[in-house]
Image 1 (cartoon, rainbow, N blue to C red):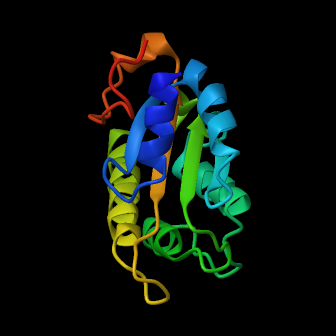
Image 2: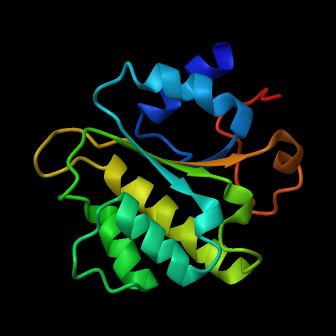
Length: 163
């Protein structure tokens, strides 16, 4: 429970890391704690449906209700992730289930995805025009525990001491 409470506290903050791994088995407990936080919008995406760049754009477009003008390319994806005005919230937690399937084995696309999510988190962390504070924006990549040690994404775990 302590690790889950620590995870929720991090997800409510504007502090880095903005994209991190979480063991799949811990997600339910973290999710249950997050549901008591009405200020955070939790959006789940299935990494198994995002094995290519075009399928990632499609899945994120559906789940985050991107506007019709979304151009289905990295620049447009980056712009949408930094905006989200059509999906107002005081904080965002994007959860990628089956993240070990995300973008297949395309390392360049993975690096681009990670870079966009980091940059979006950093931008959201700065004070917004409508408030004096930043907005929490985090991406959780859910991976089975046996995959956490072999993941080559060069990303941290959300909390230390995970099983």
